[in-house]
Length: 346
Image (cartoon, rainbow, N blue to C red; front, side):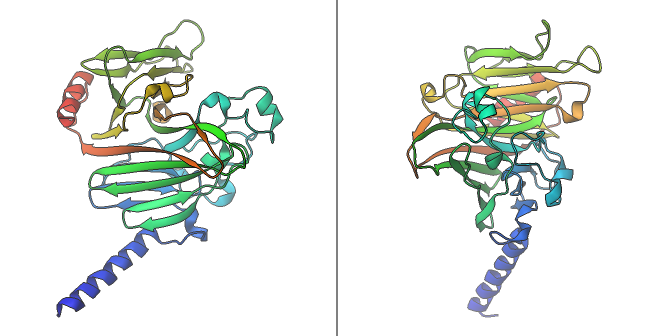
């Protein structure tokens, strides 16, 4: 076979594989189905139909690291979550982008005066977190999704997910789609199971505070500092109905969060920024955890906050984090896992 024929054959095969991988075009009826990107080393799954969220990440052929119910991924449209902020909230978990701070989610809009009046902290903007995103660009190793324009937050999200080797790059851009200047920060939130081991690399003074969201004086789970890392000590509740919930706020210069699940490490990094640019109600890294007798559905949220900024009409702000997915050794105790992690960070 001649060289140019060989190249043509390879090009045709590559295009066929890309078409098989992505399947749908922008705006087609299949935009709602789970889209998997894999390079033979790692794989991720993106769900355009429900907030353009990442719901799967793992080494190729391994179990999912992040917390998400796979039975929800390919729901029929009538089963998907309502976009009415007053409707009961339906969680899909995975990795999602929010606006920051939480206290301003509903005070900058007039469509729902009842949420504005009580300065509601929940739910997040459904147009950004639950609405269907359009696939606006796609390549063999990358996909870009675009949200509707939100009449609540006055912004539109553009998300790009890219895989390369054992790394995933997640970028969220928030574009001001109104005629007025608005102020927001971006906030990446990745959920793992509440009983997974999660570590934040930091110095001993990084912990600003821990909030315990349990009735009475039960301060569990507790945030501990050992060997250069903060981590929660998981806590078995005193009875089957009890749920322990905590949230910790950490001031770090260069975020690094590592989670261990199903013998895999997920290491999340983001570039350094001036921490004074973070909204004062938030922190550069925030960890939320819940422990209950329903361990399979318990959550641990790995959160990174970005600068709070004024956004002129038509302008955008951007947040990027990188994930590294690595094999683990199968060790179980925290001390051994910390040592293993330190070796992987060298």
